[in-house]
Length: 230
Image (cartoon, rainbow, N blue to C red; front, side, top):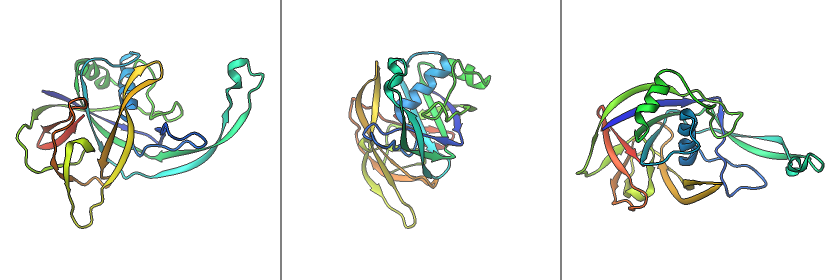
C-alpha cells in the first residue's frame, strides 16, 4: 500500500470536548472527526466517504493554556436583537505539531494538493482562528504487519487495539476518552474512540488485541517504523 505522510503545525489549536458547555475544554490533540474534516477541506468536499485510515504522531509535548474570551450569544440568529457578549473560558493546545499518515480512497488527490501547497478551503486546527498550513513530507510504501507479538510505535493507539501495556522506567502514558468516531452530517455523530498516547515522542509498547470490527485498526511498517492506522 501507499501511505501519504504530511505534517500539521500551528501556534495554537482547540479541539472542543462536546461534554463541556460553560467552559470550552480541549482534547490534547486533533480529534478523528476534525482530521477527517481538515482533509475534506483540502479537497473541497463536505465530508469524506469510503475507506480512510490515518495514524497520528505527536511531534511536540502537549501543553495547554486557558484564555477567557468574549463569545457572541445566539441572539444574532434573530437579527441581533438579543445578542450579547458572553465571557467564556477556552482551553487551547499551545504550539501543536503532528505528523499524519494517510491511506485510502483520496490518496492520489491529497498527494496532488499537498505536494503543490494547495487547499480548496482554509485549513485550521479545530477553530477558524487556529490556522494551519499542511506540509507535504513524502509518499512511502507501507507493508501490512499481520503476525505480531509485542508492538512498539510512536503513533497514538486506540485502546481497543491494546491487550496489555508494557511499562518502562521514565516513560508515561496518557489516555484520552470519548472522541467522536464518525461524522454523519447535519451535526450528527456516531460512536466514540479512546486513545493511549505518549507526548514525549517516545514509543508506546504493548501486546495487541483483536480490535472491534466496527472500528478497524491495522499496523503497518513504513520505512522501518511501525504505525497504527485507525
